[in-house]
Length: 250
Image 1 (cartoon, rainbow, N blue to C red):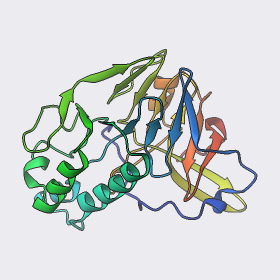
Image 2: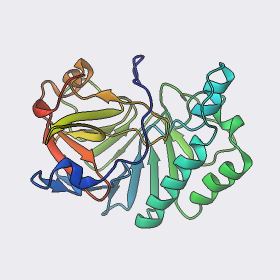
Image 3: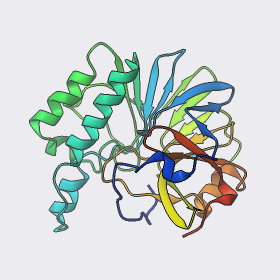
Image 4: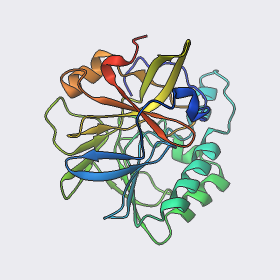
């Protein structure tokens, strides 16, 4: 993620209805003509390929901060893997793609608790698991299973960690940790979100302790070229679509 992340916020999104029943709700996001199922946990599923993609798990972020004297509860990896287990159980993918920054730093795999490592390896049984290199975890690591790649191209889609500037048809990326802020019925609500314009998508961070970057930040204009994209906010039971231009800046 960029060098100016905001503080982490809760994994749970709150009641979906707090976003307003009048908003268009969808569990589907189209990228380059491919219909993808968007999970309210922040994952995407490609039914035709039985491929599940998640971004920015940031496993062992808590232990990385603790080593620097910033005490966070040491349960982020367990919480993140529990949510990932639920999503995998729902979709039963044959391929799982983790879009980089899967560990918060290079020492994260070595600090992973035995129980969390066992769960991670169990999740890989019977399926292909691909770790895409991120800026926090650019090198392959032993003991975490799976295969390692800089990017993955499959059909019309390309999966990579960091989005490229503009005009990248079919790209699905992470890195930016998009969040959106909206004002409804006298309340200001902030949610993790997918950012997508039909051509490409930037995924929300999946990690329990991952921060967020407002979609009105200039980093998103560099990716999409303008505010002509949609923020699909994560609710408890569904997604809620807002035009990016309607969302509030920080």
